[in-house]
Image 1 (tube, rainbow, N blue to C red):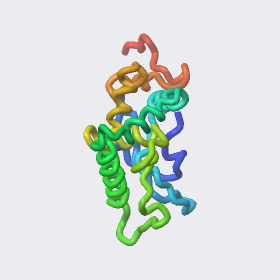
Image 2: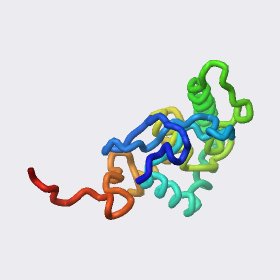
Image 3: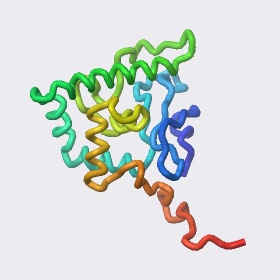
Image 4: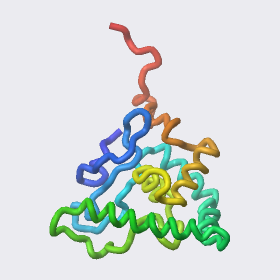
Amino acid sequence: MRPVDADFGTSPRDTGATPHSHPAVIATAPRLPNGEPFPTFYYLTCPEAVAACSRLEAAGVMREAEALLHDPNHPEIAAGYQRAHEAYLQDRNASLTTGEAVPEIANISAGGMPNRVKCFHAILGHRLAAGPGVNPIGDWLLDRLAGEGLWSPETCAWEMGETADEAPPENPPSD
C-alpha cells in the first residue's frame, strides 16, 4: 500500500486510527503544495470506511440524511450541524501557521455543511476526528454504518491489506 503522503505531496497528521494503528482519518493542509486550496481538512483514508460510505451514497442514503437535517420536528440536528461546521472551520484555522491564510475557502468546511449533506466520506472523517457529539449527521452516519454491519472503527479489518500479498501470513514462521 502506498503511503498517504504520496496522495497529497505533504505529510498529513493522523487524527484517528483503526484497531491496527492504520490512520482512518488524517488532517491535511488547507493548501496543496501546488497552491490549490483544499477545503477537506479531515480526510478519510481507511479503504474499508471509504467503501462503506460509497455503498451508502450509491444506495441513496444521503436523501435520508438530508431529510433528517431538515426535519422540522428535530431542529437540534440542524443547529448541531451548524456548530459542527463552525468547529470544522476552527480546527482547520488552528492548523494554519502565523501569517498563513486560505481566503478562498475561509467559510467552506466539507461534506455540505452547514446546509446540505453532500459527502459521507467527509462527514465520517470529521466525526472520527472530532469524536462523538460534535457532528450529529456524522454520529448518525457512524451508527448507520455499524448498524448495517458495513464498518465501524472497532471492527475494521484493514490490517488484512488491499491485496493478498499484503495480508499477514496465517501461520507466521516461528523463530
